[in-house]
Every structure is written in structure tokens, then in C-alpha cells.
Image (cartoon, rainbow, N blue to C red; front, side):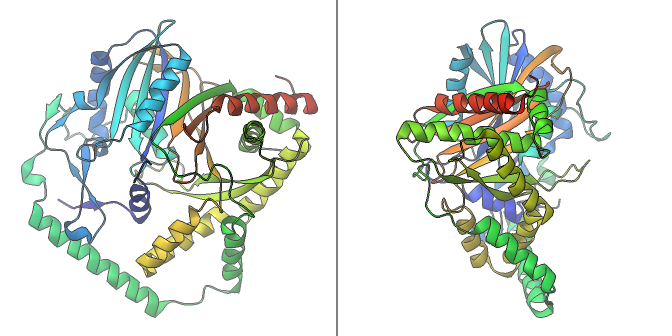
Length: 458
């Protein structure tokens, strides 16, 4: 059988999981009713047929000469992935449960995902889905969550595939052995060298306009800021998590009411700026411009590719700007410029070119792009399904998302919209950021200030 390996981008993401930094993203689905772990396993099991990646584990290449490969788990057992998460009680207790799960690594010897079923007060159940980031970016993780859990989102399996049992061994006749893996890794390495050699010999100048566009993107996105932020702390082992959600239509109305049309993501960034301003005030730090990394999905509509396919842009948040409308308009101008210049696409092409030319250059560029001088924190926004949604016949009440912090980036903000609501999911190094509630309070206060200044309807 052909051996499927991690892409360059996926391998870079996998390598970031070291020290105290974990490597997973998380979706939290709150549904009506009490559902035990057996019911969730019965719901999930037939859906795995259409998602074979969730039955694969990573196998390191012999001698490390190629990226790890995805191969079927021979002793796959669903019970090891859909687990009883106990009882959490209320929303604050759920945040603590999710924080504890964010501290826990996914086992590299098994498929890199899990669902914890957590009983809540008020007749609710939380499904906490974790996926390793090397197998799913924001858009892909949302697609997996929908296919795995939402009613009516089942993907039709191949007609020749049977529904897996609770624990079913992979077909050993189709699983590559050690010698096959070594030969394939050598073949991959040789092909990479040949591609690099041909690229160097056959390279042609890309034209003055393209070179200027790329240099401009590098200047805007990768130029270091004047000083690192207070979030530039070595990662510790403990995590804190907080959720804050609002009506999606409220943020859309704020964008429509702005003097210059603002997107929902522009309003999100303005709200985050308010939260960061309040956090800095608590620490006694002076409010100043803070650079945030904003992931940009490069997936095409209808695409089913499971690999990571995103890039980013970096936006300056003027935290010292007290007027909420002026702050929002400054963000609108920045994001509009970067989108018009296609900075995210230029950076994606740059990193791909460096990966083909030189592994050393690729690693150097990766370290530079992850520097706390280039950005202070990551703020992602992934649209989810809207309308009335259900899981196991029960209404989906709310969806949250959480993403892991990075080394010397002690706070991460992940935003998701679903069921007519938009949720801010905050994950922080608990030893570096001791008052996440200040950030959530600041987000709400900034949205209130915008609403009053724009006279926008709620």
C-alpha cells in the first residue's frame, strides 16, 4: 500500500510539540440531555469508516530521513478514544476540566484524537474533542467535528468498506513492514533531493513585481516589533481556559454600523484588543501596540484534503487607542491592506520554496516566524455550522474551541461561530496569565463600548 507522510507544514507543526507545549486543538460541544459514554461510542463508531485518518497512527521514518507516516493502528480500540470524563457541574468547572485536558498529551502510539464525555448541570452534556494539530488545522478540525458528531453530517463511506467493530485489527497483509518503510523513506529522500536540485538549476526570476510583493509581505508580516510583550514567557505545564460567547448577529451589526465596513473578524480583533488592554492594566504595564498572528485558511470551498492548509497575517492592535471606533478602523485598514496584497498567499509560497531549497533555511524561517518579537499571540477565527443543530437527537446548545499556546506565547485566543453564537475560547499558561477573567471582561466591555459609540442594535 502507498505510504502517506506528513507534509512539510504538518511536520513543522508536529515538531512544535516539545517541552511543556502540547500539540492539540480542542472543540467543546454542549448538548441537551444526559448522554453516557456508551451512547457516544455507538454514535461515533459507524462514522469512523468515512474518516480513516482517525484510525491511523504516526510511524517515525527509519533514521529520521523522512517525515513520519500515517499507518493503520493494528489494535485500534474505540474505548481508548471515547472516554468517560466524569461530572463537571457548571460552566466554570467545565473550563477547569478542559484546562486539565489541554495539559494532557495525546499518545503518539495511538491515533491522535480523543473525546471526553462530561456530565454537566442543567441537563447538559459536554463532548470535548481533541485533535492533534498536525492532522487538522482550524477548517479541517471543524469538518472532522461535524462529520464525527453532528446529526445529518455523516459522510458516506466507500461501498467496499465495512463498519468497524469496537476493536478491530488492521489487515496485516496491507500494512507496510519495516523494510518497506525504509525503502519508501529512502525513495522519499531521493525524490526530495532531486526536486531541490531541479529547482535550483531551473529557477527563473519570478519578475520584479512578484519579488516586490513578496518583500512587502515579509516587511509587513515578519518585521519584529519594537519590544516583546509580557506574554513572551517560557511555557509552563499548567493551563487555564475561559469561554465567553455572544450573539453572532450582534458582531455582524457592529461591522455594518462602522464608518467603514468591518468584517466579523475585524470586530473580533477589536474586542480582543479590549481584553488585552484590561489584562495589561492589571499587571501595571503600559498599553502599547501589540502584534497578533491571524491564521488565514487556504482551503478551497468543497475541499476534503485532511492536511493543514493555512497561512497567516500579522495585525498591529493599537491598545493605547481609547476610542473604540478609531481602534476598529485602524484594524480594518490593516487587514484590508494585507488581504489586498495577498500576504498570506505570499508567505505560504515563501515557506514552501524554502522547504524545497534547504531544510536549514526552512527551520531558520520557522524559528523567525514563531518569534515573540514577530507576534505576541495568535487569534484564530473559524466559522462553524449555523441554524438548529443536533447531536444524537439532542439540540446543540453551544460550541467552543480552544487551541494550545506556543513557546514564549503565553496566551492563545480561538474563536468559533455556531448555532447563531460566537465564542471566544482562551487558553493560557496558568503561571503567566493568572486572570483570564480580566480578558473575557475586557472583550465584553469593548463590544459594549462599540455598540454605544456606533449606536448599533443588539
